[in-house]
Image 1 (tube, helix red, strand yellow):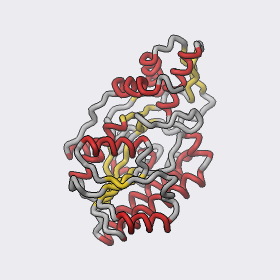
Image 2 (cartoon, rainbow, N blue to C red):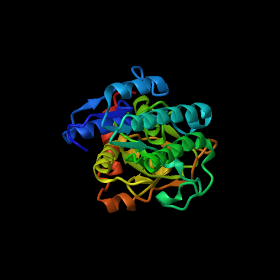
Image 3 (tube, rainbow, N blue to C red):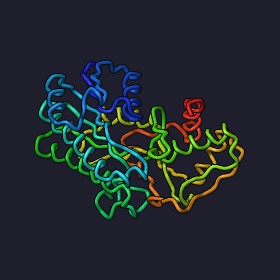
Image 4 (tube, helix red, strand yellow):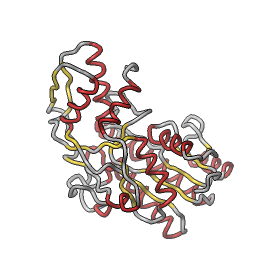
Amino acid sequence: MNKSGKIYIAGHRGMVGSAILRELEKQGYHNFVLRTSAELDLRDSNLVAHFFEQEKPDYVFLAAAKVGGIIANNTYRADFIYENLMIQNNVIHQSYLNGVNKLMFLGSSCIYPKLAPQPLKEEYLLTGELEPTNEPYAIAKIAGIKMCDAYRSQYGCNFISVMPTNLYGPNDNYDLNNSHVLPAMIRKFVTAKREGYDQVVIWGSGTPLREFLHADDLANACVFLMENYNEAGLVNIGVGEDISIYNLALLIKEIVGFEGEIVLDSSKPDGTPRKLMDVSKINGIGWRAKISLREGINRVYQEVKSKF
């Protein structure tokens, strides 16, 4: 990327987009065009077309999406597939029409089949049934990957796709009904410690294995790939190791300093048994995660402990 090129970050106030913005600024990029969702509704094709015609960005990071945890994904199934398809269709198509030099589409590890072999290799895409609870969201993200590849194939667009593992970090969502597992746990333990509760309830059996990547590591990987990767297909971004939900709860309990017990609510869904990324492709290109899970959770805890 040219340091003076105009960069549009779709979703710049979310956890991923804001991390990418911080990383780009740190690396000396300075020419940004940014719009909040109130200023530009990416679901509206006419508004998106006008924006691209007016601004003509050189580079696009497509980090805007409707996201949520397992309950939100399963409850608002129509919203998740419609809104995500509309956002990415509009941004990708207008990037082509307006001569964007390079676009990065950010997906999710939920694109992989529920029972795919572990760790998840990029070539496992579309080799089996998806996890039913987040199938609409996953299908939208798969469509985004294929759309980038189709525009590359037909029009020669340098559009790339990356699939981050589970993320956490600054500007995460801590709503207990709509957040992902790690931020929800942090909020539960912080609240329990402050209120003097004697227990924290964790959804599910505690046995599913999950991998967690700090948003700052993801942002560093995204900028690295925008500068060094120009191929079809997708690239996993992760740390390459996972932890059980129960052991994650123990780690957060220790970092927060909660003295009570952990109770598992097995009436709640577990989701996919395991989601570990195979990161040999991105490691082979020359990038590795740097922030350990303990360090990352401690950073987040220090940032949010007085907010709940």
